[in-house]
Image (spheres, one colour):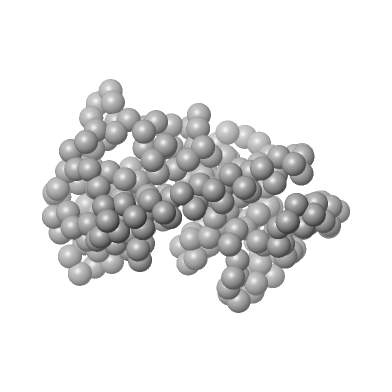
Length: 228
């Protein structure tokens, strides 16, 4: 685990507690230090402060999701609901506002790791672990990639999870709560409308340049996947 934080006292106290709880934790105080450590690999989760001295932590969160798809928990004094939704939409797996208790932090870490493990198992074992072919879309759960024809479509971890959940059962109507339960987990509880943002992003990526429709809005209920 990597904790990216520029408050030395919080970092020292937190790392000591987490190590006593059995976690392996390394520290970085800046965006640059964190990036260097991530490039070396073997990081299974990132605790990330929103405000770093060299570049915003939220920018690092976006880069992590694009390059490594490592789970991220944002730790920040920014407690506004808009900021929480923004962090989750960019790809953070949870959000904890400062000040927080160390026992709560440890519980959040365990919850995220359980959820990620459950999601990985579902993607690997769902539909026999086989590649889904839906129209001109190819959805590969093992490699976590999507192709439209021969073109790879870059999706965030959350976008992929939503697409996979719906594409496994074409024409089934999912409510927002069902999609959160199947694809996102408890970090999104109370923020059902963030699903709409992910669906908009998915549509832009999957349907650009033609009139194909894959994700259909069912007014008053939610969404369903249809072959374009």
